Image 1 (spheres, rainbow, N blue to C red):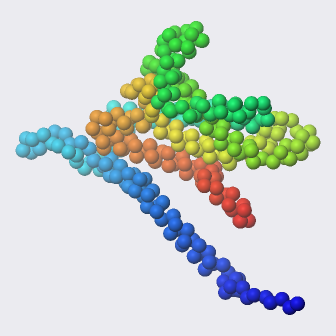
Image 2 (image 1 turned 90 degrees about the vertical axis):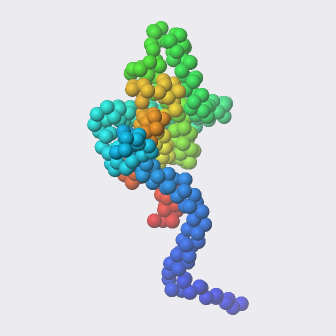
Length: 321
């Protein structure tokens, strides 16, 4: 029986699928255009409007006619230059240091504890579902409620002092308040990293560990040579998300310790305080600096450390690129 061969399409006969690929890209952009429009409205416009607001300051003093000035006036970059001089500069540097310190301390502890939680939840233990649910409970508690809970624990006559057998004023202004914020933050958000690392552990083939056992690898060697490298993509993304969230820390120290406390005042709290005093230009200047700070951290993780946030590396591997 003779077999009739169909002629391939023109694009395939020419040895190139570029026209079809271009058409697919245009169609994909058309489908994504509503999303881009929404992002421009809810993200792009507020960022630009905030930067414009940071170039203005509340009008103060009297007009040439002797009337009190009202509204705001254009001051250019004065709100930004003022962040590095005088009392405002001291407040900014203190808040910047607190923000960085909280971010580094909490993320490092959360990473270590989160990996440990993921390894425990990954084991084939009896009651594993109950263990996973219990581990995720702190992450599910609203931050404000978590702050109130820990404020009760850190009261002068609370559980923390009863366990330590000492009278520590955790919620007063001092280094002990930093420790209280770190403890509360680590307790709440370590399960988040544990959950993402657990997802990475579940895609590691069991045969890899079996082969390592045959070769005589110890448990520590399996962790350093197999587990950690293979969960690195998920771990980097988890750490990136936690860094971005910690840099915006506001509600936990505000509820747990209180506002206007120099020892725990972050950039978000400082911006909130300035806006609450109707100094919107200064407040948005703080917020803009924080936005740039977060953007730099995100860029470093995505470009330098290779954080695969949207799964492009996986798609490239599938395509053989």
